[in-house]
Amino acid sequence: MEGLLNRIIIRADVMAGKPVIRNTRITVDLVLELLGRGMKPEDIARDYDIEVEDVYAALLYAAKIISREEIVIAET
Image 1 (cartoon, rainbow, N blue to C red):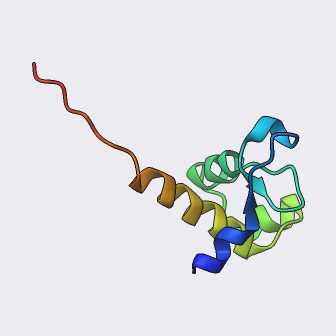
Image 2: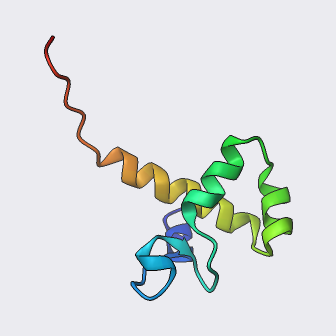
Image 3: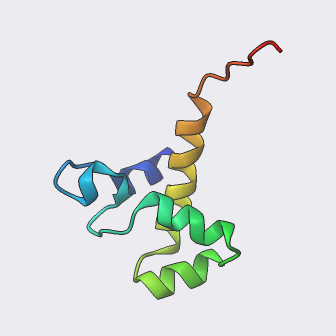
């Protein structure tokens, strides 16, 4: 599964440094939003001319980023 992360790149000169699917201008956040709206990975891949594995790579990338977040609970 970790090999999927090679499908995600971050370059300052592509989409202002947002993480994108390699060799495209399709951002990870777009893929996540489409999934959140109920699109199937196969439909996203077809509509945006990427591979289904690219959709899974976006999910894995997001999971890795979220797992590093620190949650701070404010006392009330």
